[in-house]
Length: 255
Length: 256
Image (cartoon, one colour):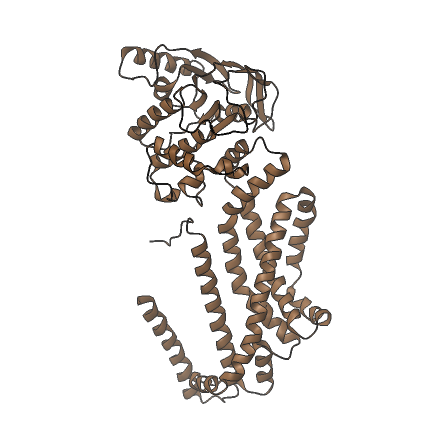
């Protein structure tokens, strides 16, 4: 992975090159309603895996289960056998920026909640890297949707975790901005283990090394595809269109 | 500017109707004095009214400060500690079911004729709106923000994590709700102070009005009432402006 400026600053958790995950027999239910059942999946280290499925199927719930934000039967294991606590960065649906903090202070949120000394220079460097050199003092409300997503990406990079969970992070921006952000995210997060939820097959095709299709109610893994080539992928190729057809077929099999 | 013109015109029309009614009907001045007579009294007795306003203003401001501190503290405690929630929430509702006005004589009995029984009345009357508004705000934090901050604070001890989420996410996110509660509180705090003065006091605008009423000095009563209303409106506008300035990130617009 490309060395980030300042990644050598001391950090509470030792950084590894990327950790693989093994999800085993995961299940989550809210009350009597089972959302996920018998869900097992291997997530390769240092790669981007997309969870693809229709809206409302439980993709976000799976992400929350992996993050430890919801409980349930089954196990989430890391490839090095160490606990995941403190090794996850989350990029949620929407930008999740705190509206009362400036862009720079939002990037520094992790340090704030952990009562660490905020490294303002490194935060500013992160903003520069996502293409926003001049917004550090701006409140989120004064930024465009695409800029807010970039700040959110800078905040995710600032956390510098080997495992990054993303929940439809670019679903709220226009198509062109989305393409740019996908490229940016693919570049910035390369080398980390990324698990990203999306309902957009083209997004999955563009940026993932592995695409896992979720279907059913309660949801389970339908199949996993491992397309060839580097990411971000160009999508106006025959291979990409074949992949799209295959994904749509997999998504449609149960409905 | 336009708003000022509208306001002055509205006031002029209402005062005109009042004066016309008094002049035409020939009603006795000790029943209803005209606005002109009230204005004359206001100027003549201004020192007296101002002295009593000072007392009432102090009661209101102290009541607001103490009531806000108590309300904010209660909301945080009720929100954070499960045991406090089980006990505190019902108590909060019951406290509102008891009319504060019925407690006024008791407060005078316990705290005396002076300042503190009135401050206590103001505190009691604003405690509920401040506490419930802030508590509602604390409960309504965006789950996405909480998830994010929880993951960021995952390595912290549970207590410290709860505190970090409270300080960095829940409380700031609830400030607009608290501001709504404070606006209501600022509007009703003068009622508490004046009711307290009616029940038993030797100073304050409430005392002055009761005193004037008993001596058929209705013009003085109206003059004191006018000053009280003016003070309350100015206090509200000041608090509103301060809250707006303190929360510049909060969207703020009227219907177009």
